[in-house]
Length: 342
Length: 298
Image (cartoon, rainbow over the protein chains, first blue to last red):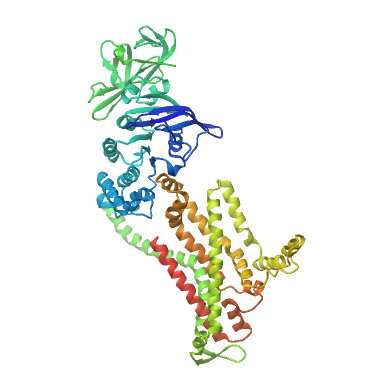
């Protein structure tokens, strides 16, 4: 549906996007994930028409998008700051885009009413944006963007301005709405949990390049580059060289993992904290508990292992009985060790 | 236990006293900060203004000054078409100057607001630069430029055109007013446009608005307070101006400012000059009230 091919953009000496190619499918909830300054917002602004790439093409259903001015694109953007018009009521804000399409007054009124109902703001139609809470403003911004029924909806850090509780609610609501309206959503975020919970597929950006495009679960369990392994979820990374049984880790010996790399290739072994068991008797690594933090549903145990500068993180279900200072063994099944070429 | 009661008992009155002292020193502080400005306003503005306003109900003395005999003739004279025409033509010239300043000033302010930070500063300094030169000198410069054998005419003469009579008409007055007060239009407009979140314009485009529509529906309404302030800053000094019509308009009494000046200095009719001043003030006060009302609504 949306085809991005070889898009590059430089600002002076800074490369914001380097030869980015992506294909986004009809009806998909797609996330562009990366740390700030990785180029994901630049890509979003190129799609909306506020920036032009130095090279590359973007087509939407086969039509060239870059040749069209911003106000002629069938693409709507929900701004990070929401960018609601402060001198207009909620209803007027939402109607603005429809008025530009020269629709009849009656149709505008019915569509505005419909979309405000959908986001649960019918009672606020006559208010000004300044009279609303952050969550309500976010809904107005969303309503204003979807009321035009764009073929593609772009969302720039849609939940970053909300506090934690409202954010969780809005996450569910965004998914529900996307399902209902059937529009292709492209969301930009630096929050990997947000991307994982919202998106069907995620493209991880780093320094203007796409590192990996995958479904959330595969991205989490099978990172293909060291950056993805480090950025997505807290991970334990063991540098070493690939071998038949996993990785010959520097200073730690052979650690179990599934390897499809030629023996001797420099590689990182990534093991998720929740995949590691605390094993009193044996285990592949031995160490001393440095710190235990209890989070309610899970506990995080940091274990110092001789020969490794940073502690190994272990996540256990519920409360744990181990105390700082205890000697423990660490174990995981080979299938939970992922080799990432370095 | 006893120790703490004793110290508690003395602590209460001390804190009460220090609170009273604090209040007094705050009042003194306020007086020190406000005093000079307040004295300036009272002595140099309110007292003379009260005097002027009181003159409006008295008769003139033959060689200037006032005879303290109550009369309403100053106000009936104000309705004389001769004077009404002058007031109306002042309103007209000041309005035209304000509109032209707005039409020139808005795009200027808009462009400056889009410049990179360094160039913004340079542009703003350039805008206020004329204020570093004496006002009269700058107005005289226009005479040098526009007079019969002046620079513009000699340049046109080299092209085989002219000479034209540029000076001493209403157009020259408007030119002078726009030239003199344009910076006062640009600065508040710049402040308003600069404050405007550029994402609002992007949002408007994103929702399908052409640039002209974005300007009319988003940029202009949100910068309206700056427009009103700028217009007021140009209109107020233009309406009561007497230097520019005197020098560039050929010295005929075609604006209220000249008329007032002539009443006081030439006709020596202080009461009628005061009445004209009152009329001018009334117009400006109405405008200020309108501005305050529109600012509160925004």
